[in-house]
Image (cartoon, rainbow, N blue to C red):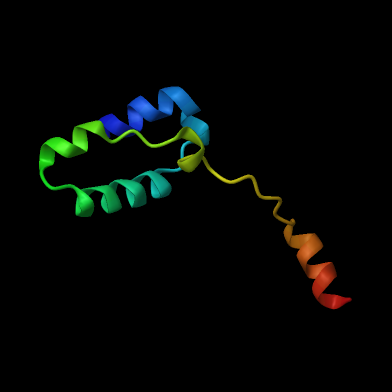
Amino acid sequence: MRIARRIGAVVGRARLSHEKLHDLLAGQSIKAPDIAALFDFDPYPDRVMRDKRRRQSPVESGIRALT
């Protein structure tokens, strides 16, 4: 959570994807030779930001399904 707080200050809490952050941290922890190596974990902000998606409303989805 400390890492999320620190990175959230950089990218903005609303734009931070906790799922992406935890995936990167899990991969980094597997590769790390010891716990001290995790202190240098600092991913690029664009790798932990939420993706911008345009989702259709339920009405638009229903109309598209009927056409």
